[in-house]
Length: 454
Image (cartoon, rainbow, N blue to C red; front, side):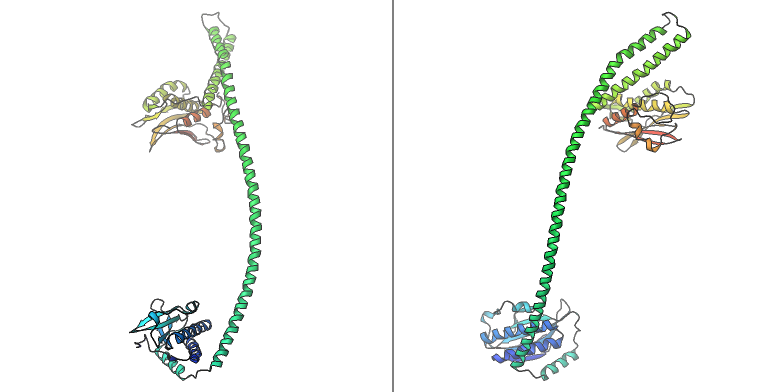
């Protein structure tokens, strides 16, 4: 027994004999065209319907065919439903088409219950741009479909032949397009393979060059290390060889100038003074070369301890006050803020700060040289600022090179080794030595040290 449809059916057909298969196919195509399915979908629905009708005619002696136009609540589009109520019950209430391709022609094909009976239902959604039929339009479709005269089996066969020819033409056209695409794809693949081979060769060549470059860099690095070690040994050996005779010259000059010795004329005293001064400068150079050689060779090991910055600043204030011989230059050592402790090597840190203060006093004509300490989060900032001539930006890195001195400055002595040595010591202490300077406004050297050491 057939229950109520989602809406009033568009058309009813009876499938009882072989000729009815042609009628069902023909009328199915007409209904599909009337509700707005595209031509290809019309053919698909008609083909699927004829295959299912043939299966049901053979297995259950036929069916009653009903066409219904319903709405899909998920997509909001209209759906053409075709339901086939078998004359006799389906075996086990199931239906499987003889051709597995039939199910791919429609959106849904299966068995659904209808009251005590089971019907075979297939569906096909209308295009998204198809207008939603009004009740008046549905009524017109029912009248048109009921009044149209069905064609003969020959007419339907001719229509199928025409559809087959059109399908073959389309397949042939698609095959030709596919051959063109395959040809283009093969050509593209050849080009890609050629490019890949070229890139592979270039990459291999580049890799060989990189490997050779790394080998050369390793060789140069080894040569550089050997040269640096040789330089350090040379500086140490030469400095040791010079230290003894220079010290002897200073001692002899002190003896000649001693009041207990034979008196010297004024000219002789002046010349002896020059000898002693030159020997002292040479001894300072020898000592700095020795310090630099030790730093470069890695033989300096910091003695880590808690350093009291207040005590250290007091020592520097006392030892360097004698160097501030210019009345126009004032040495200012600010008291560090409490708690003024840092984990470092007191001797090396004092050597760095003494070097910076000594340079400031030497190259400042008027104004002040100031030492101050400032706590910055987990670091100490120890700065030495002066009001000297300043250093141009392009030379601010060069002054940390060995034996380099800023050109044009007043020559007040020095070897150009103090700042390179100071930077190496600061690095050894786990910190950095930075310079901020502007010509005509002075310079500021800043030592940044971690609180807990390196």
